[in-house]
Length: 233
Image 1 (cartoon, rainbow, N blue to C red):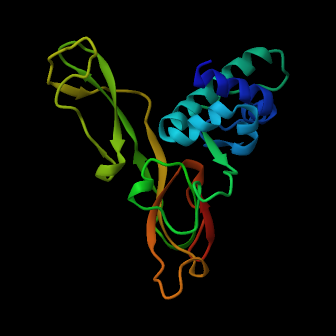
Image 2: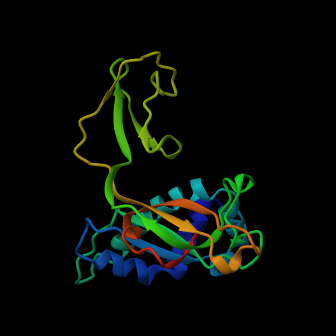
């Protein structure tokens, strides 16, 4: 079974009521999140749990799409409901409850070898930057083949929209004149950066606590202040 189908099946089994409550909400512009308990998911489907740990970046993006798909199915299945149901596109998967084992749980901040790993990190907030709006995606089109395509921000280049030098059409278009498409949809999200520091009692004797920057998006923005102890998943 495909990963997205496994996740959709899990949602129907464990989170149908949660999604129905989100569907009943009147505010379509608000960001919503669905909290997934990793231990529960792993007990239900160990293969899917292992996939999350191995490829969390791509899977979490796919899971957000699956949340929209499942909402549409639930809306159709409950079309006789007296309460109007509205599919929320601004919805996000939040994984919690990773096992407290050294491979997944960090009190000392991750290092280069941990890049790409899905971890739980404990820290103390020492600084917050004012929230701002971030354009995270823009639609372009090729003036030669007219094929539209998405350009997403590159976090490693300070959230810059990096437009390709030539048309990315899979059929091999040689076009190089790429222009932004006038799209009615605006791909903008709330964004904030915070700085966290290793907790004093967790570092070795005589060692200086290290710090790291963390990016917060959507419903996670403006949820903490300096001095707060936080857990980053």
